[in-house]
Length: 278
Image 1 (tube, rainbow, N blue to C red):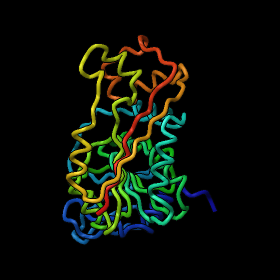
Image 2: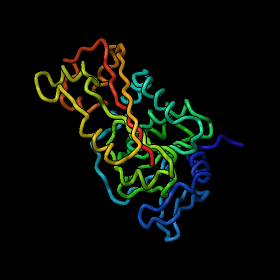
Image 3: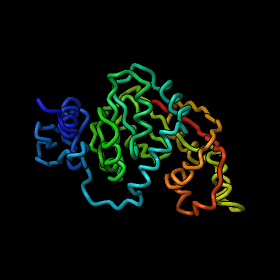
């Protein structure tokens, strides 16, 4: 018997977890057919691609994020830049959860590295509006469900997830609350004032953008949830010269930077991990 394809493996894994999905058009429950078609009782239909992901977008979306950006982000995350944050988030999640949704997951590296530290049975699902990010995620990470989707028209059933991750990405609090199980956790990671300080100083020298405050984001999070905990993760990591172009390409800072003008020996990671319960 021949080796199963990436698409066949994804079909099987999505079939096992079809209870997580609802139609982004009519909100009805969805089934996953053995041929890779995902459909609801109103016959709205989506197809699992050969790369092993499914596109649930109901209208075209233009993304400014490129394949190169996501490939660069994977290289940087693989270098260990965010290891301490991943460890802290995994500790917060614990080993009793069954389902995790990463919103704005990009190429999926954060979700994959966090899930590595959890129990083998946890089902990790990543969603992003950027198709190139999800294609990259499906290329590198098996035994995950990767979806192109818009949280404004979410392809997931209400109260389906124990944990939602929102890492350095915009939030949709109304949808997060709909998707979380009772007692579930939203874990949002936001930059603190020293985040990528060495890079910002060079790209935005002597401008307001050199400084950063997350005060408004944190205040809004506290408005949305009653039981909020907050912890700061701060550390410095040495940066290899060959990593600098990748680092610049993976951040919005790169849109303002000339790569050859940037010189870094170390980088500050400074993040707040916000946890809210429903």
